[in-house]
Length: 290
Image (tube, rainbow, N blue to C red; front, side, top):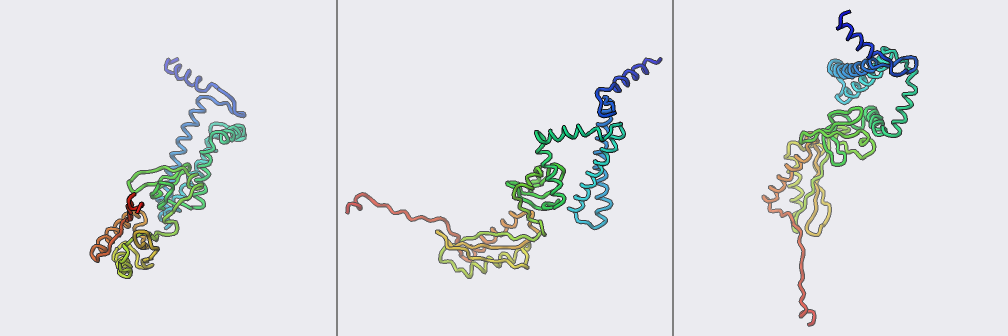
């Protein structure tokens, strides 16, 4: 016999040697390698099919981008579930024999995999209830950015600095999440302004209102508002409220533009912005004796 065939035969016998039994199936190294390769192939195929169904079917059906991602993700999960069943049947493993394995996994979830299970279930809740969608502008704790991907375990948020931050899905369910674009892109920003005592309040209100209307990113309807909030220790406190639908994802940019315009106009009209003032009274021992 050819020596090369003898080597192949020995390798085949080694890989086919049964290590343990799972129900009626004998599990060998070859079985485990086959499972691994088929599992990798299933993941690759499910991801490619998800991309294909989004690009060639869902987008042509005029479905919104968040719904496309949701349907695509559920399709990927369904393909993976069916693929697992087919893979186990292909390598000769009876699914009824997996009851013991399922019990062991359940114990693992209870002791060490609860975070993974929690994030996975939270991801399903997010995809079903859609409190957060791809493209939304959200704030979670100190994270502020656009949702670019919702996965099985985590959600990816892209900040204005082009930094991708991965957030566990459980945080989006258990913590307070500020969603700036949940209903639509129209949001209202609050810009605090203070002026010195003695200022012409009607002029202040008019100037702030005109500054807002002259900004191209501020909506004309609803109109901007100027509110006189309170009398402070050092000045009078106003608030400029403006609506926008173009600057939702770059909030600080619009606020910065309005603040620059407010400073310039206040200087032009002689309106003073106050600074903290304190009166200091000095008393000497001699004055106290008198």
